[in-house]
Length: 425
Image 1 (cartoon, rainbow, N blue to C red):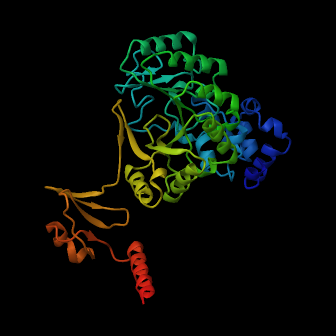
Image 2 (image 1 turned 60 degrees about the horizontal axis):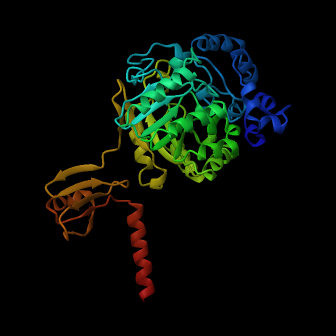
């Protein structure tokens, strides 16, 4: 805790650390009880003026606010632009009307045969088990549910969803989401997992949770071991910024992994939070260090109240280009657009195929090197040329590689060659 607070504003430091015993801070129930839910209290903690609280109150009346002390302590300044605060503090921009936005842009409710269960893909279903969350993320896909927190999660709603799953043998995988399923009482979560596991055609269970990010204290060994008993269960979590990769978060992931529960991550591309290449690199590499596989980078959905988070697809593609080849492939997520209207996820990638011909393709790699790849067995050309000199040869199949001037890899090759020649003498 103290390591995080040293770099934040003085008032935030005092609030998070001054009079809190470590055993309370590490108690997830205390963290939930002490959540900040009132703009006036938050502004007092951050040292913001009263007029800011008044504007924030207007937002919170429509889109609720709740922030755990732990998550707020990750902020490194009291500036509204801080990437942690930006994700959890109500912003007046949430009330601005945006074109082409909707409360349910992905048509989850239209594709729901029973309330709370979305069946869009042939073999998978989304099971919304609760509307409760540890914090209310300002970019949330399901902000529409915040007004009615108890609408889902009842035994009657659960029974209807389970009945549909039993009657639909094409479904082999279910994603339990919310809200946050890790906030369900442990016996209720176990009961749900047990009933899902009793459905013969359900092969895989996934749980979507942001608890390892915003309330890592909740991931106890008891919780993890209970989940592990219903294997195969995968956890998809939701880190958006490298500052969220704390020792507490790493511990929560480790507890899950030791119980046999693999962990993947789904990031949302958010303007002012992670829409810079270096930030995304640091996040993806940091995830690997704590043994979490970067799975998806989602373009921000056009949800009502989230327009200020959206950036261009072009920016997302540029970030992906800065990752591919420059960091380990294990650390590179799939950049995807979840299509409005229930069209599903479409992967987006920088254009690497420049030309496709009869029996060959010409591609561009992460360095800007242009390569001809021939599909004919045994056909291989050789040579390295600058682009201006060898394009015709590349098209004709007389040349295989065009490497741009200044290539670091070409420079290394020349250095290696010089060293090798020197050693032979």
